[in-house]
Image (cartoon, rainbow, N blue to C red; front, side, top):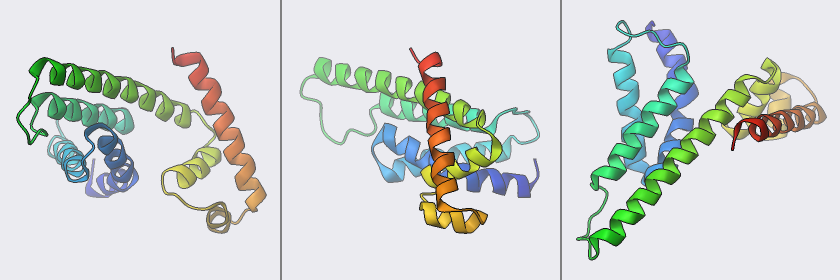
Length: 166
């Protein structure tokens, strides 16, 4: 991987991974630190490993780092009054994080299976938070086409999740 490819991957996944990490650790700075650490690791090991899916690799790495962070207890600034009760909360939080990650990976896989244009429109709408009008202007298509593509994307993603998510 050269620096241009890395920059492309970073720009594509950094915001999404930060939101994902935040959903797990509930702290913006920590989430950003976790994601940045994974990108540093990716860059430092770029010649040692071959990765077939950067998306899957990065989401899994961020999930694991987030779970390690939650299990370490470093996020607690107070003394635990009831260790068993707090341990149960952490375990539940970890299970929720794992379930959330599995669902997130299925969603990423479902998005990857969309037709390229549909996938790109979905990405712009959901992850880059463009409006339908902005997407239409950017791609030189009608707003109605954007709406239709989003409907198709949501239907296909939902159908994929019904089959693969138990």
